[in-house]
Structures are given as C-alpha cells and as structure tokens.
Figure 1 (cartoon, rainbow, N blue to C red):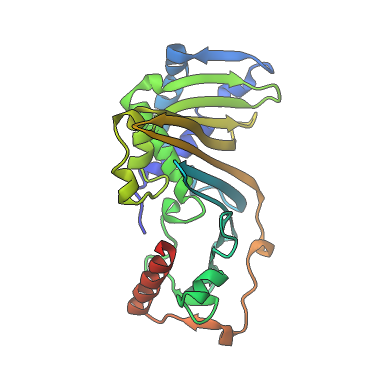
Figure 2: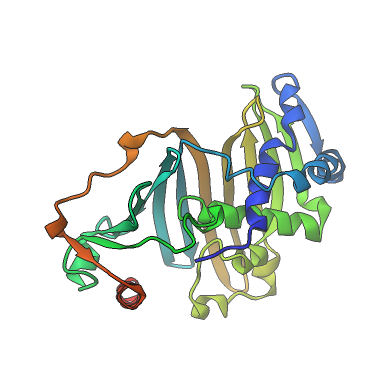
Length: 297
C-alpha cells in the first residue's frame, strides 16, 4: 500500500505550528473562530513547506490509536499499538478488535533479513486464512515503506490529511487555540465529515457511503491537537456525535505517542515449523484475498 507523501507533512506541522502558544501562561485563552484562523494560520503557512520529514524523523517511539465508529446500530471499535526502533529499523503493529477479541492481526518487520511476518488471531485461522497463526512473506522490494503506508501511522496520517484539506478549503476551519493549565496547548480544527470519508480515515463499505447525504457531509468533526510545552505532540483526536440524512453517527479516533521504544517491544518468533511461508507475490495475493474474505464475512 502506498500513500501520498503530503499527508505526513501535516501531522508534523500541527506538532509545531503553535509551539509558541505553549509559552503562554497556564490557562491563557488564545484566539477563537476567525481570530484563531489568522493567529494560527500564519504560523501554519510559515512551516508547512519545511516538515516533509516530521514523522519520518520520529524514531524509537511507541504509539497507540483507539478507533471507534458507529453508524446507526452498526459499530466497530479497535485499538492499534505500534513500536519502531533501531537503525536500520524494526517495526511492529498490533491490531486488536474490542468487538471481537479473537480478531487479531499483528505485523512485524525486523531490521535484519529479507522477510516480514504477520500474526493472525484465532478467528482468521479458524476461517482458513492460514494453517498457522504466523505467516512470513518477502519484504517490499523498495525496502521500508513510506511512513504513511506503515500501519502504525496510516490512520493518523489520514486524520492529518483531513485536517489539512479542511484548512485549505476554509481557513476558518481553525476554530480555537488555547493554553492548558499544565502548559500544554490545544488547537481545534473542524473537519467536515465528508472530508473524513473522502480521506478514508475509516474505510467504509460502499453500501454505507451511499447513505451519506449532504447533511452528514457538512457535519463538523472537531479535530483537537494537544501539544506538550516543547511543541511535541501529546494527542491528536477526532471526536464527534451528530445526526443528519436520517442517520445518527458517533466517532472517536484518539492517537498519541506513548513513550520510547526498544527491541523488547518486538515479538518473539515461534519455531520455523509454526510459520507458514509465502514465497512470492502470487502466494501473498492469495493470502490477502482469503484475509479480505474472512474480514468481510
């Protein structure tokens, strides 16, 4: 999977564009509404072109994403945790469904060797995706994927792209900036739900997308970026409840860096006899076909 690089710029931009705000006294109110757009927008314009390596340069860290989406009575809820460390870098992403605990997909890319690994939870083994829980496959020929194609930051990158698109469409989307009591700074940007859908923050089935009309597309989804006093990211959250076109929606996507990473965060592989080997692209395509069918059933 490949993602356009511009998405990675934005999250980094939002980490530092209001770093000066973090110098305000605890609890200081910063501009809101149109004033916030001018106050923050000028800083955004100054730094956006210099942040192409913002996420790429964030090394030896762990992060988490708590993702919840509900459309009428249909809902999904998952937690994704990941770690990246070393040079060359080892990476792991752990995906857990809170709706069905047996829906587990982990991916592990060790720094050494020519293969990477996937661990499947019981539900996928039972559905015949693989005869063993562990699967190995060749690493991408191009080497380490672009930062936003990596599962550890894929959704946050799409969140960031949505915030950027909302800002570019209307600078008044920047609705508030304030200094928090603990020295942190919070910036709020309203993202239209239609932009959320367009950027595939959540990959929705077409049958559901077809039910999203003009009211829902215009609904505002506040994106709150909270920065530490030094300008680094504390959390990045999309959180909203709204109704329109005869439907009710709830969503919350909460991303945060959670601390330093080390090799101890990487999984221990089982004996080779417990790993199903996918030797080539054809085998990988067949594996992903079965996995997609299992997820859609």
